[in-house]
Length: 448
Image (cartoon, rainbow, N blue to C red; front, side, top):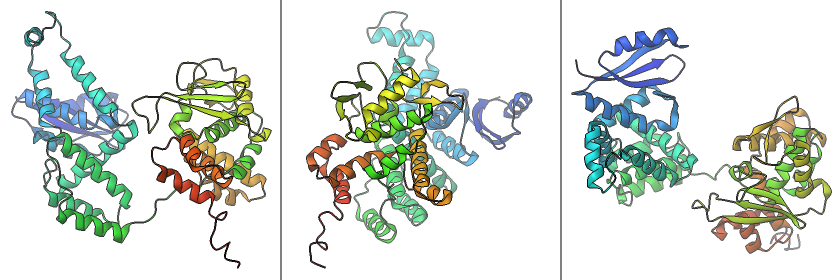
């Protein structure tokens, strides 16, 4: 009996992609220990066991960003089916990668030894799988984790759309891509469509099938979609210094309040991104925060604009106002929490116990919103009004707030750019324009 590739659906849960000669029996075997109702959703008959395992591996690779555990994935049956169909066509990953999958399954230990000897490696060495895994890891590290996760999700979306219309996703005809963006124009914002196009282009580039999106047939449609449906990006409000002062002054003097105050003021003063802020440690060579006589010295190992880890050092001086001084706030939190090593910013439970693990970047956004809401309520807003106001802010509000506040106080543009570590000045200029909106205003100088 030949092997089959199957998808098992857990009602209200994930899906399982596996290989078995008898998928029905596999479902029956899994049911007693499962918390979900399991059903056999799809089955593909494969010509031989190796082909089945190749398809299984390729499907697992494509969905690895949503792997819950082992062979279970947080995907729909349709998404899993689309990925498997592409894998069966041998085109869901670059052809060379598909061949690697097949080779790694076919090679016996003796075969690996022959390859190792031919490569001049010691007899008995069997590091081919290890090298393959390392190569995959290095390739994945070329882009940030968030970018890889977004691209994987976008590619799955395109696969499902193509599969439902019996269209080939890889290599896709240019008309297929035009049809995809046309079908989603107005349903998805232009920025989301742009990212999905990037994911589709990247997948084709890696597979050796570059898409000609410079062709007039594509360009005219894409320009028309942007003109018809384009709109300014939904940017969160900048937490300027006056708003920040209200927020930190409304925080309690509890352990969590001290942590939030330090996190907000350090994040603001150093213009840190959420990921940079939560990656800080108390000690170490890089990604550290250290108090000196002049202020805080923050050393970042890498950042969004420094993916190769060149490193950067940021100075945060003492604040003129004690309530918004990042140095004093950091010292108060560090001493109260008894921090001498490990993550700089950690969770604090309701019993006032400090966790060993660092905060997530999502926690930064929640802390910003909570502090802004507390400040708004302290200023006399109703709970409902304060809650609505807080939704306009997020983790990036600290970084944009520093830039906007500095520009409003006549900080030179090149100093703002250097502190924010922007590679292009036009990015910095957006914050400067916001800070000078009424300060250098032609209408205000017209004598009205």
